Length: 110
Image (tube, rainbow, N blue to C red; front, side):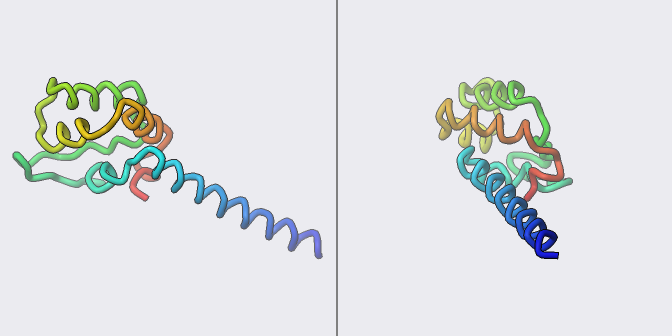
């Protein structure tokens, strides 16, 4: 019986550690500013016009990185995204792209 409780305790600690890793990876990737729009299923933004915001969890890292760099260079014109991308370093863009490529639409909203 003691082995069972020890195993149960170990499993609980492992789950807490895994959850902490997800949070740490999100903070390291600086995705806090992304979650507010891209982490809400069915979210619609109203600036500069009404449009559906895509869920980016599970997208290819290369796609996300290319899109952010295009916003940063002004090749994509959305004003909010352009401002956000312009504030990110190349490493922050790569980290955010890697983070979201490992998520799904469901896990990215947490």
